[in-house]
Amino acid sequence: MDIADIATTDFTELDAETNLGKARSVFEEENPKGIIVTKAGDYEGVITQKQLLRSHIEDHTKVETLTKSAPKVERTDDVRDVARALVEGGTKVAPVFESGSLWGVVSQDLILEAVLEHLDSLIVEQIYTENAITIAEDATLGQAINRLREHGVSRLPVVDEDGFLTGVVTTHDVVEFATRNVQKTTRGDRSGEGDRLLDLPVYDVMSSPAATTTLDESVRDAVERMFDKDYSGLVVTPEGDDRVVGGVVTKTDVLRALSYTEEDVMDVQITNVNLLDTLSRESIRSSIEEISEKYGKMRVRHAHVRFHEHKEKLRGTPLIQCKIRLRTNRGQVAGSGEGYGAEQAFSVARDKLERNVLEVKGVESDREYEGQLLRKLGEL
Image 1 (cartoon, rainbow, N blue to C red):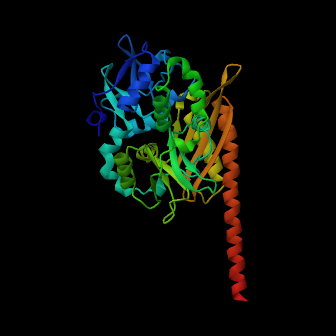
Image 2: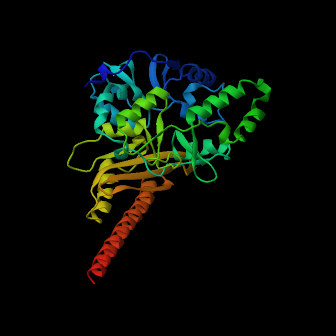
Image 3: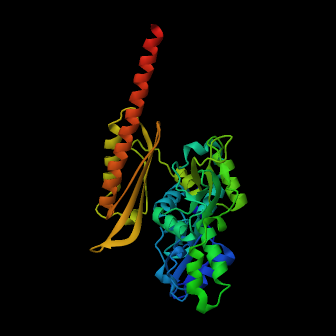
């Protein structure tokens, strides 16, 4: 299926010289997945809601300040290739070109709507993300914003003092809440009002109850619920107990599954691939394969490596966070780390991943020994 069958020519566009306040109002009124930014009629990039969480940016700042690159898609590109490009570009929307000219846009939602009927063959357990990043009800809005930025995620399950799920706070919730409340003040009051908003508890901002799913639900049913409620993800909970956070499943997880390859070699997807410096996809794949080979019973079906850039720099080199997640026949295994530059960050994350893989191996060895011991005892 060519992306031309899915993409649309109906999209929101702003000039790079437009004030950021205009972008904020567009997101509030139209709630687009992203805005295409042009300069003198030429494509420059995209701006998303997540970027607006940089609260120190004033409304009079030019849109081009927050514009980020997004993968350029051709009208004739295959939907699987475009899904991979969106995942690896860390974006939910991308421009579609024809003969070098901007023709339209394609979004995460448009792709999922087009392939919805084919998602019955997957269940949530096959694609969800374990070990979700959570936040407490009494944490402040400022802390929630920092956590969203720090981990590069768009949603945080909210838990009470007992660790039970009570709601969800998302990038959209934060931007909408802050914009709505700051607009009630005069221009002179905005700075002080913004500080007070950051001190409010997450409980005042979160959506409750949280929308949930279970491991055995079909991905199609889960995605349909996301569309019905206009959510970008669901909290995964155990069957029969929707108070326990078992993970999250998002539209990006679904998109990632759509772009799995059927190559003989390990399938590796890299989010924010533009942050790679001296690393290559092949070197990353080889490094991960070395780890999986140390545990012969583990077959890695898919590897996801995500890079996230922080503002801090050392002699011009940015601090990078790297997260590696493996989907294997033994479940999910992950490792994360930080360093200056993608290579150092990946090295730290790889070491953590290796320790976690060996820990899984040790646990299974203990179980095997325990089973052997019990069998011998049973023979007595």
